[in-house]
Image (cartoon, rainbow, N blue to C red; front, side, top):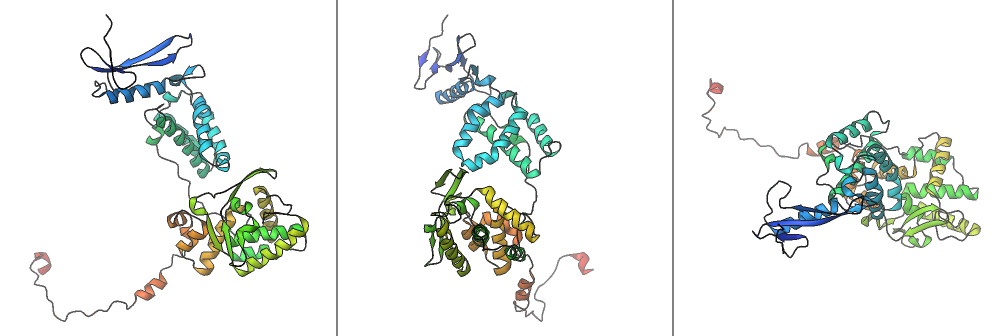
Length: 403
């Protein structure tokens, strides 16, 4: 005998002749093309639905879980298909191209490990096993293992967000810390050694010098320096306007974006007189060889990140100092400001374009001097001590003490 169904305001939710609430929804076709439905009167805890809205929310989850995709239902979807069809396209659309390229290989590693496993079958034990493998047998650094495991967590979080999973089982395991690693930098003395083996006699040598000098003396990000136009420099007021970043594949395929990595990255940096002098000299030299809007350019086109790396490597070896990368010139700038001028955290934060001083401290707290001798010297004699010549307390407790 068919059950009498009364429609409610929620799609797929009904009441029977006894006024009990239930849902009935289509979950797509099977491999033979036949439609199937899913029906339930209870929630995930096995209790009858108390409201129509509760039943509707449960129905939505069921439809999402059983949504047909590429001939397979979501409940039969492997982790690999989920990554290719759902998470990776979403992630690529959310982040900058450079960020996506950085994490792309990490996602491949996670896919290789979990790819054939059904998304719904991934367990806490599977995640813990993967975590252990990353930290022991994989051969990856702790920092890279941390990024890979974060990729797994992000993907499963998204599966929960779109209703394909009820919970993210990886959150029941410990995250992988990046480990303590002190980034390589050039101290002031090492930077001076590098300058001593550079020459502006050749045109390209002049370009190499201004590139290294500009990054070291301003602390701008690599992409910000690549995107820098001459119009961004206010020679009259000694200011550098940082407001763009460059996304580049090659010298003829690039995009100068009207924003920086963070909202606070759009900033104004004051330039010292030496830097202004060197920039003026470079502008004149550059103009004789090419017409360029870009400051850091020898042929009118923006330079590649790898070009900066090659310049640094070349002169680091000549000067016998540590070989660093472009990002490390930013770290070196911070070290220079703190060690030479004892710059405060707020000034450094604003100069770097961080979202707040807390971010600056997170990465550079170790660079500020930790000695407290100066503080103790100020404390010495600061408090006036005039003790009472007479005991004013009538002490009546602690019998053992009195004895």
